[in-house]
Structures are given as structure tokens and as C-alpha cells.
Image (cartoon, rainbow, N blue to C red; front, side):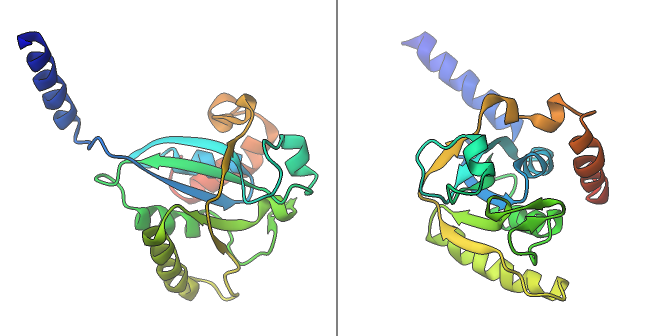
Length: 190
């Protein structure tokens, strides 16, 4: 029993020293290609993980090829696990508005199709209210109307392994060099 108490105390102290809480929350955003979204959000302090995936469609367990064909209804998204004691959902939304063009319907740069739409999948009513407020506030920064969808998250499907940490694993791939790297530089993240 003394060993368990000692381990518990050590764990609590070590965790407190890291400045993190044990509670995490999730945010799910679509903002064009999930490789870009993942690369942006994984650089933020307080973000613990970013998983590329699919959401918003009708086909269970879609593949990348099916989503790219535009027939599943899914968007390419990134699901962000974050520590709300270190970064707020509102701050994640601020970064989202800066990281893509929310005024283009079903398009981000050369990526065209419903799978590349701008969408915020809220996980609860609190996130929905925050997203609505943030969208309204962000509109002043754009001359065109923001077309970002706000929808409840029904189901998130993790993308295939080769899509995870794509920029980190393929920094010299053409898409990374010509699309992701300039975006990160623009945001002061590289």
C-alpha cells in the first residue's frame, strides 16, 4: 500500500511539474488538405496530438481514394487533442481562421472538391457556441463571406497510417515544399 501511495504522489508531482492537467479535449476541423491542417496544429503548445481523418459523410470506414472521389460526403479533417489548461478552444479557432481561406466553397488553393471544404465539427454545445462567436468575429478580417460549415461531429474515421504526420515524415515531398512549408512560414511556425 505504501508503494502505491508513493507512486501516486510521485506521478502527481511529476505531472504537476509539467504544467499539464490530466483532462484533454478534442477539436475537429476541416480546412483543405488534412496534411496542412495537421502540420499547423501540431506546432501549437498545449496540443498533444493531431490525427488526420475523415468526417461529415455517410460512408462508414471510408478510404482515402473514396473520399478523394468526392462520393462519400466526408471532408478531410484533423482531430486535435489538446490540454485546455494550456490552450483554449477559442485560440484553436483563431489559428484555424488564419491557417486557411474560409471564404472559398469546397476549395483550398489547388485542392478542389467537397472533401476540402471548410468545416468545424463541434463536439458539444459549448464548442458550437464558441465556433459561432469566433466565426462572427473573424468575418471582419475577410472581404468575402465566411462559408465555413458548423456541424456536430457524428463520427470521426482515422485516415490511413501513411497520412499521419505527413509533413514531418515527408518534408521534401513536392506538396510539402510548395504548399505546407510556405503556409507554416506565413504563420510564423517554421
